[in-house]
Image 1 (cartoon, rainbow, N blue to C red):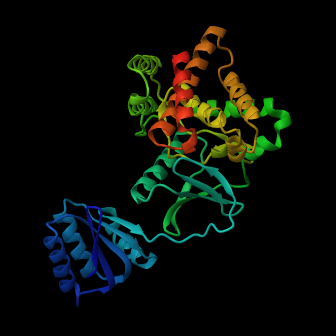
Image 2: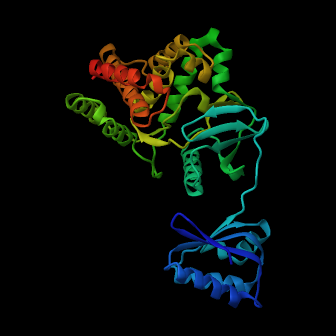
Image 3: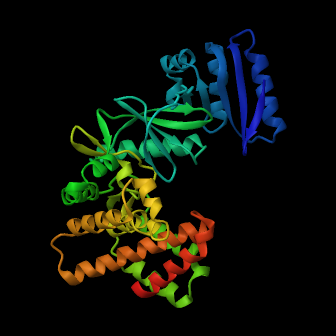
Length: 383
């Protein structure tokens, strides 16, 4: 029996057929490997398993009970998975099917998020390929969040399959006759005001959903974490003022997407839909707009071509689009309240940008110091 470690998990590889003739030898070998490695966490990989009889199932059930009623079998073929399903064994141990392989060669890019890239496979299907995440559990967690959010009323595409794309993972979504909202924006620049209004209304729809029954992070905590990460780049006085600002923003339970820029929005049958849910959280909408400020404003300040490359619009149009959308979203607020909201949004956007360039090192290295100074000076004036 082949075996290897994935970090601290021992992977035991099942092969061929397991039946009454060989199950005792397989059990003895598996237990030996577990004992040799000081009883670590372990799982079984069934990629090369062709058949398992009731004797093999009883062996796995025995290990499952000894392991606190917890056992994982992954990469089961359809035939092997059917055996676990028909016998009901998949109800008390985790059995995962082998992921099918999908090619994205020649597929257009629809959106780029913090964790991956979304491609259009055909007219009815899109796939998000995870460029950063290599842990299947993290992807399954995001897929679960997307399904839960949909059931709460968030207009999002439902993932129906997790696949392999080369050596990466992907989540497949069904989206009928979809067009990227970024393309919609570019095609309708002569009606920018109308596009902003529609986009603002869509953001309101997302934020109108309460995050009840979903275990989501509070986006305020993310910004507090950003502040801690950039503490060495700012004065103690500025740190204290930013901390006071963040804590003064009322805590709310609205669904927050976290990266609601137009490349993460699709238009299907004239309705807008979200396609990227890895940044899903809950909180006050002001934090959502802080992230959008960074996308639409800060990245283009010192590199105007960034906006053209990412959104296919000019820096000036991007700024107008953001501020007009913000006005429509907070339409009806009195002037002083809106100014306070605008100041907070701008400050949060600068803080997030400072975190990305100063702590994570994202962006053009030659501009790092210039951008840090730009963010710090801006925060000094705003907060």
